[in-house]
Amino acid sequence: MQTRHHPLLEPTPGTRRELVSHHYGTPGHGPKIYIQASLHADELPGMLVAHYLKREFDALEAAGRILGEIVLVPMANPIGLSQRLLHNHLGRFELHSGENFNRHYPERFETAGDVAESQLGADAAHNVAVLRKALREAVAAAPVETELQSMRRTLMELACDADVVLDLHCDAQAVLHLYTETPCWPQCEPLARWLGAQVTLLAQDSGDSPFDEACSQTWRKWGERFGARFPIPQACLAVTVELRGTLDVEHLGAKVDARNIVHYLMQRGAVAGTPPEMPEALGDARPLAGSMPIAAPVGGLLVFLREPGAQVQAGDVVAEVIDPLTQAVTPLQSPVDGLLYAREQLRFVSRGQRIAKVAGREALRTGKLLGA
Image (tube, rainbow, N blue to C red; front, side, top):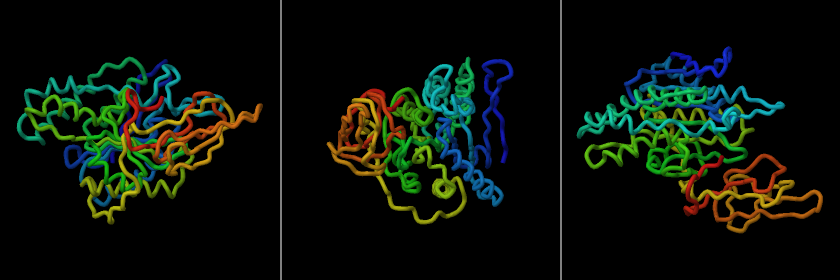
């Protein structure tokens, strides 16, 4: 195992931060797996899973069982880890720019495609290798001016040529669920079963280039550009893994999640060994455009009536908002039949605040599909 340190641009003298990555196996031999945790720096369950993954990978490497290349970034956002205000950790948005740490990743597929086009041919594996080399060079050459941009570029340099990218996040209060691109679902379905995901939300382009889509979307776009002339497979599965809620930082659950990720890597051929029998699916895949938010039309005290994981029908009351001054009670209803998979953890809300999400089966929304 090699540990590498990646300095970021320092915003002011004396304030330099760095990313740390752990590297296992041999580049170019077998599939490349990239895993990062806590890109939203206040979402900590993934950091604990990464802790146990490192233990797993250390043991696997000592036993000579790593067949591909594995890159693990246990703390993907040193900027957000440092952001605290009045004892509260603010890790979702950079305080300087207001930008979400999981948006606006550099898309270099056009530049890389221009460089690689003359070298493409009839062999899909050859095309993948050529395009990955061009993409690595294009990402490394992407201009950066700020610390945040340098962090985004560094993360993309580590991940852009991977076969599998797992971005470990969590929601406020939630069941385990996944986000991936629609073309990736066949590769993602076994992972969903291993992790026990209760729903996987699929989109072709959710908007604003989040990290996972910046990694996987490149291959779909190259397929659209070159597919009529050269075979271009979906060579990257990138998944946002939502490890339940922010308070679900527990040893037993993290150990199980880490072990199940290793089982998936065995199935992918990145780790030697035969995994146990794959579990039955606990959930299914649904369109991200069918994930319907529930918003509070008034402010007040929020009281939930249904737990994450509940199956609800359109019109079911999921929560109530109580006005402590007037005693008015406003019911909040599910807009669709579906799975109540995530809800807010605050219990006093403002007018218009989104308080829960229900995964329906029909695509009803358009435009940008992710929250702020």
